Image (tube, rainbow, N blue to C red; front, side):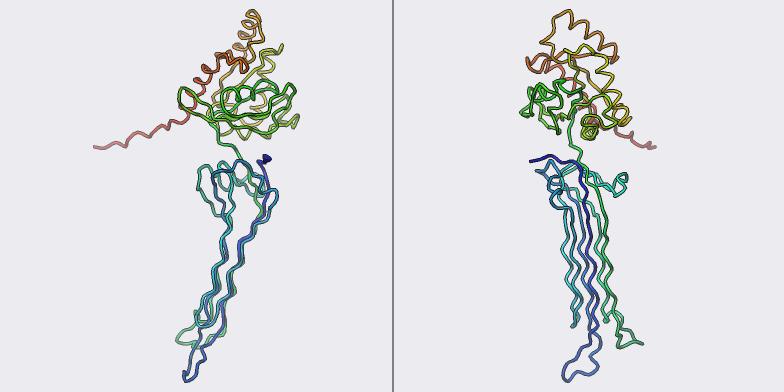
Length: 341
């Protein structure tokens, strides 16, 4: 299944059915009067978050979702049938954006959450509705209201507790494969990871969801490499785990490159809690390791974890630190109780 996280769809709700102009005509019944029924309502268009989906690929093959119009009213005071609703089933974490690509209409973050995107038109009144003491035989009925037509964007942001950041070949996919059952593609060339991957990571009997996104390079905010198009998938994360390739001779530059791209993308993302880890330490001697650790600590202004995804060194320690930040992010600060005499 291909991964798709942004698509454009066209929706239209159904129009209301027209009211009916009809008069009762039966043998031996004088002055039967009007009996035209109302039209049925048009179908609505909804979007609903469902389980079992992690991509918007279905919307690549169908972009138009049009609800049917309501049935027209009929004689004998019969109301037209209301049209069925159309429901767009999307993955959890999908944002619905207006055509301007800026206005967020809804953010579906829980299973079963539903939002009305286009309301169907009301059915028109039949001539029975207009009967009065002064107008005993109205010969008019209302047409149904027209449906609503609009263009929207669907943007998927994966739901994860922690996100992996780093340059290409920093060892993010290897780290995810070593700590979870996820099996992302791993190779010795840049941009092996082309789409985000999710893995469920176990920490001391607890579980968190970790997202691995394609690596960033300098100028990603300007569209270089794969750009920053996948950074949206770590916007929902409570903590970011920044992996730095320990075999690189430009440790501090690599670190600052990622931080600069985060700040260029969104200030809020750059302010998220970050944990820095020096990866691939199994390929370094003790002297080089000590030097590069100190340089990275100075650049980051905080502690640096020493890990190796291949050898499995230091993984549990950094996972515990990640889990602690996730738990802290989940805690909700309750408002103090109101004062009472």
